[in-house]
Image (cartoon, rainbow over all chains, first blue to last red; front, side, top):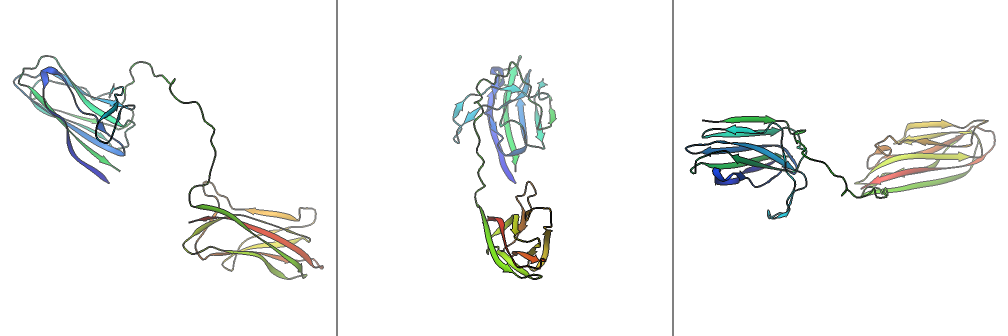
Length: 123
Length: 151
């Protein structure tokens, strides 16, 4: 079984600007988890997962083709204060090879930051 | 605190937004079927002349080479007289077929079992095709074993 160590796919980012994580590749993956950590005086926004099938990157993470991204149903959460959140996806091979986290801000304070970590389990 | 936990099944969660276009898919291309790598198809053929009445003789044999598996795909056989044809596996009767008056003097036995191409044989297994001539006269007989070796 392939295990990929937890990977930081969104370093601490100022939430007021909105944020999109690096895409996480899911080739030969049957389950994955993503964890968001957000902290700040005031937090107001929503966060969700997006999937892409036609996105392409080389082995160095250089984007060869910026794919089309679609929201994964049921993944969206409104966040209104500091905290953490986890998306637990599986088991079964996902039908898409790429996933990313998108945060949309609706009024957080400038000190609010967001980080996202990904973890995949493969075959 | 504003925490959340979302459990999602892996499949069927992508919400398609907008129109899906299939214009960029390539046209259907012709396909040729080739054997998988490591598969070698072959047949072994044998003839035997003047088989005496009431006797059983070997027409052809095949031994699976060492470090090799093989599939027995088919046995074909025929002769000048009606007869009983017996396929032997390691000296045991594996299969049998008779030809008789009013039917063809040439027949076959099939062992394909999709998705397998035939009956699996292991290294060292011996398959032989024998004929028993029940007619009062001598006759010539022939047969072949069709094999796929997997190395």
